[in-house]
Amino acid sequence: MGILSASPTQMDNCIDACVKCARACEECLTACLQEPDVQARIMCIQTLNDCAEICLQAVAYMARNSQFAKQHCQLCADICDACAMHCEKFQDAHCQECAKICRECAEACRNMAS
Image (tube, rainbow, N blue to C red; front, side, top):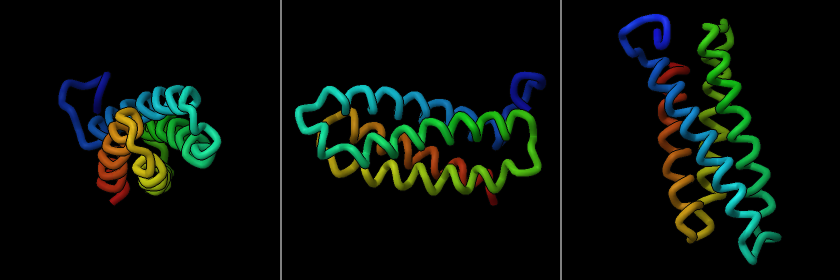
């Protein structure tokens, strides 16, 4: 397991995906706030915030090997999928890239949850 051992695991892969996704969501949220159609992005911005937070929470649950990590990862996958769906509605590069990263994180979290 990760930092304290040498061999990467499925959990390590999921943790990496969650960290990457949280960062992408924060960056996308910041970029969305600068777009001229910011009012049309309210739901996307709110979901980006939720996604970033749940991804970081999932990292903490997995890192401490919580008994609830699998359930949390399933919820994280659902929120990542929702975030990707919102981002995909906008054609700018930051939203499209964020959607891709959210989909990758959702897959990693579903694998972790199963």
